[in-house]
Image (cartoon, rainbow, N blue to C red):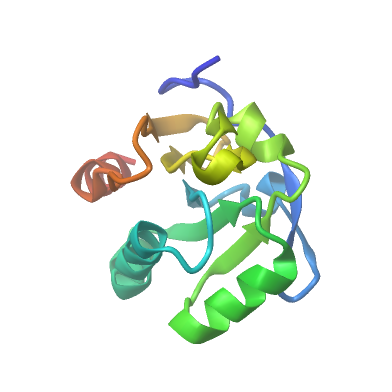
Amino acid sequence: MSLQKGDKAPSFTLYNTEKKQVSLEDFKGKNLIIHFFPAAFTGVCTTQLCTMRDDLGYYTKLGAEVVGISVDSLFTLGKFKEEQKYNFDLLSDFNKEAAQAYGAYYENFVFDMKGVARRAAFVVDSEGIIQYAEVLESAGNLPDFGAIKASLEQL
């Protein structure tokens, strides 16, 4: 199953690094950029999230919020967020439900790890409709940040 522009974004409720539940519905009335990433403390994932961190002011001006989601525990994500000074929520999809719902899921990943989030980016508009969807085949590639910005600018 792959989500496309115009699809309703699948609902999720996940814990952030402050042990608070965060749901898709919390962002109703706002645009949301969702970044799925395979694993905290890895090179490409750090680059992906640091790019969002460094551009957060731009996204905020466009009325967008950002979340990062991986299957790491909220405790691991908390340390990752602290070390990298991320200025947005990292959400733990430890039970792998959100990654599967968004089609951003590896059954088998490197080093025989099973059930890891694929690198992916989604822009969800204020009504909960997907306006941009990118699920990468290779975890070594980064999302198209220009396309993410362009989709937001059209909202």
